[in-house]
Length: 104
Ligand SMILES: Cc1cc2nc3c(=O)[nH]c(=O)nc-3n(C[C@H](O)[C@H](O)[C@H](O)COP(=O)(O)OP(=O)(O)OC[C@H]3O[C@@H](n4cnc5c(N)ncnc54)[C@H](O)[C@@H]3O)c2cc1C
Image (tube, rainbow, N blue to C red; front, side, top):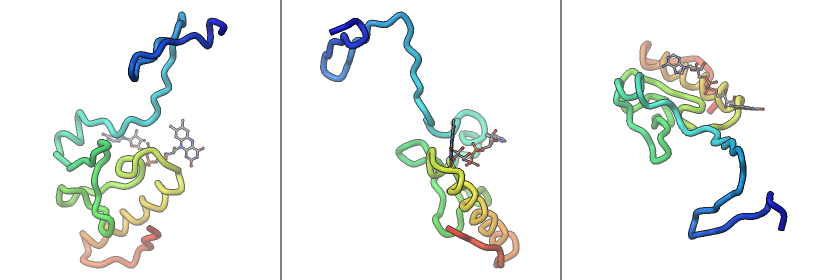
């Protein structure tokens, strides 16, 4: 076993013998301090903003969400499609109905 493969395991903790460790943690959910906390929008168990699947409105009336903020880290195509659907949701909220496309 060379020094790069050497590790010990205690329960769920592994000890890696390194001089430097860079952790790429990825998407950890939307930032809570600031806008989200001030608005008080409801979050799911993963810390993403909950949206009504039909209207794209959050738990706060008149506040909408789409994309990574409510789906979690995903793909740009989802963000584009959900952004268009959320725009239709906003339009329907403001105008009473909407002719805008709602792809998802
Ligand atoms: C490194 C990396 C590589 C990726 N590669 C791919 C790929 O190859 N293919 C793919 O399909 N997807 C990829 N993705 C995922 C893709 O980028 C996201 O799914 C997509 O950008 C999500 O779009 P969004 O509009 O939901 O959020 P974002 O693109 O994150 O846009 C959110 C915007 O809101 C702004 N914002 C945040 N807080 C506030 C605030 N309080 N007030 C005003 N503005 C605010 C931010 O500055 C940002 O401009 C990648 C993501 C990362 C991080």
